[in-house]
Image (tube, rainbow, N blue to C red; front, top):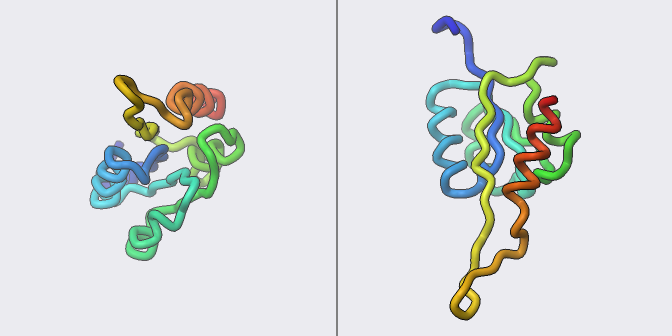
Length: 115
């Protein structure tokens, strides 16, 4: 890719720690970025600062929303970053999550949307 060509990036899980770090890095690089977020307001400060950031409201299991996220100007983005994660809480001597299959489900949904 030439220096004059801008990368296009889709990020999933951008409101979590790892995803937010990846988002800030790609914003500084000047990439055009699409982010899928259940709660777009969590990214409002960045959205107001960067014209190259586009937030699509949706869930990681929503194939049409994922397709919108991985598409820029009617073509698939150059890079897909998945930082999908879950909140894990301690329960007794173990752990639990409200959504224990989100990582698996999300990966399958992204791959389905790309195929």
